[in-house]
Length: 282
Ligand SMILES: [Zn+2]
Ligand SMILES: [Zn+2]
Image: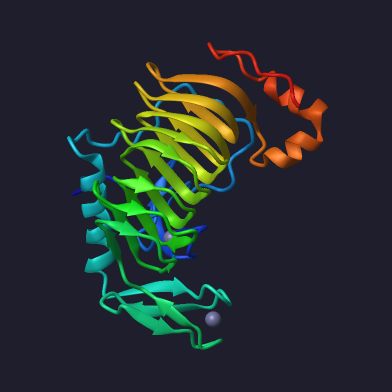
């Protein structure tokens, strides 16, 4: 007979509302509907600072982006149906995994479900519940791109808003505005963000500079380097990871913090381990 198995609980994805079962002890999980990472537990207490690695160690592969794409494809394409949300009225509906577009039953808006693979210059706006993949030769300069997930291996010059994960596996300047439930800067990536990056969670395995506003966890993996400003609920700098710059912990919203300089100073005091001293609030 099998031994008693760990307790599983029903959890709901904060990004798409999909319900699934997870081990009660799990710290993070991936939504089987939209691919977003989230914490299955009830809202975590503010200002957790963990030096430990998260238990879910991701396999080290030559091309993490490629394997992640396969994981996406497996999740996305293997399903008979998906729940998607109208861009205009947020009404949710179930669509076939094979469909490339649909009509919102509430407001009749057209909803694009297609995947975009950008292999050359592309400047038209994209608004899809599918994926966007900018290949190494791709140059995406659209002023507005909204999608479900994105992998950036080429140039990204415009704005990008992803409901799920953005994987960045490229080097150079990223001048546009980026927002996503999760952004992963891959190992060989070396990027400079010119605009504030808005995320729930961020994982840095390569090198980046810029300003991050996260309402969840920012993780700097071994050999990852982050220079810049971070406002996050929590940060995890693994052994061998480097962070330098200003850190505001416990607030996911820098604007609020900026309005409350004394509170900012108090929160910044929670820093101790090997980080550069916070710059004075301006
Ligand atoms: Zn989801
Ligand atoms: Zn609608």
